[in-house]
Amino acid sequence: MSACDHPGLLPMEAALERLLALAGASLIEETEQVVLAEADGRVLAEPLIAALDLPPWANSAMDGYALRLADWTGQALPVSQRIQAGTAPTPLEPGTCARIFTGAPLPEGADTVEMQENAELDESGCVNFREALKAGQNVRAQGQETRIGECVLPAGTRLGPIELGLAASLGAARLSVRRRLRVAVLSTGDELVEPGQALGPGQIYNSNRRLLIAWLQRLGCSVVDAGILPDDLQRTREALGALGEVDLILSTGGVSVGEADFLGMALREAGELTLWKLAIKPGKPLTFGHYQGVPVIGLPGNPASTLVTFGLLARPYMLRRLGGLRVEPLGFAVPAGFTWSKPGMRREYLRARLEHGRVVPYANQSSGVLRSAAWAEGLAEVMEGSTLVEGDMLRFIPLSEILG
Ligand SMILES: Nc1nc2c(c(=O)[nH]1)N[C@H]1C(S)=C(S)[C@@H](COP(=O)(O)OP(=O)(O)OC[C@H]3O[C@@H](n4cnc5c(N)ncnc54)[C@H](O)[C@@H]3O)O[C@H]1N2
Ligand code: MOO
Ligand SMILES: [Mg+2]
Image (cartoon, helix red, strand yellow):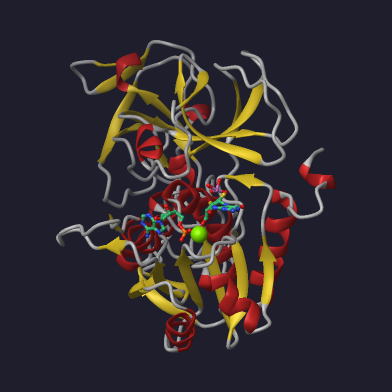
């Protein structure tokens, strides 16, 4: 039986589709102008329109000599001016050439550049060209990259180093971006203790809080750290209700079927549990609901489950709320370097590496083992109901595609 015909489990595509639709219905509308230095990781709210041609004027791609090709019939040409980058040339005197350097503006009247390695300056100050010349060679035409008025980046683009460099090349000093998403982070569990404190009986250190806060900061969110919440229904209700002005509550743990899993209970009681139990491993009990109108994503507490569900579901949801265009990781197809003989009802996301171009999973895929992800370079997707033999293709999602 596959997840599609399993009554209790929602397939991955359906879950993501629902989450993205919910996100699209609660877009963050407010925008702000930020200087480029503050714009890394933000989502562009308005298209970036070129305010100038790029390059703004024709220029040389080589260090050499600029000439009008029609002036050259094989004879040596005298050098009539010297043009460095950052200077303004005078029009080219007919029958002459100009000494020119890479990035310098082409003088009016010139249409061709020969690199200096193919030219020879004689004692009389004239240049002999050794090879046949082609009109337009080594010339970077005005506007060859971008024309003034063109849309260079659409609204919804996530800004990274390349986009910021491009905006700078067009002289944009500020960009209009969506305001930061305000996200509250809650770690649920009586067993949790923060690093730096001594462990008591039955206690473990809280890893999800650090993992999520660092990740959210990379995503450009402003984080409200709500600390550790004990496994108690009344305290859960109070904590959820007291988080103030946030766009999203992100919690870990307390969403499965245990008697101490109170987050799901609190959402059910509030009557707004929209999504629960997905056909993915790890991550089955992922929960989405609202508490007093605020969206809540309850990530499963096992650290590898937190990682997978945050990266593949919560992250796209959050970016879509900011109007993000490309929010889902793409990954790529690679051959399996392992055999998978037991088809499961849940789609598996194995913490894996590429070795000699093949996917190799970490030996211990328990969802409690975060070390698997530190070893891994990506998530290898094994589809529900399928078996694999070595060499079969599967999707590999690099962690670098989702960590930020
Ligand atoms: N009878 C069943 N039991 C479980 C089922 C099930 O279907 N039936 N599902 C299992 C699956 S799958 C998962 S995933 C977990 C999810 O449980 P919860 O989200 O309710 O999380 P907890 O029970 O609170 O904790 C699970 C596990 O993770 C550890 N944990 C929790 N928070 C943190 C943290 N911040 N840092 C580090 N580790 C954390 C916690 O100690 C538990 O070991 O449920 C299964 N059970
Ligand atoms: O769905 Mo859970 O995350 O497998 O352990
Ligand atoms: Mg539990």
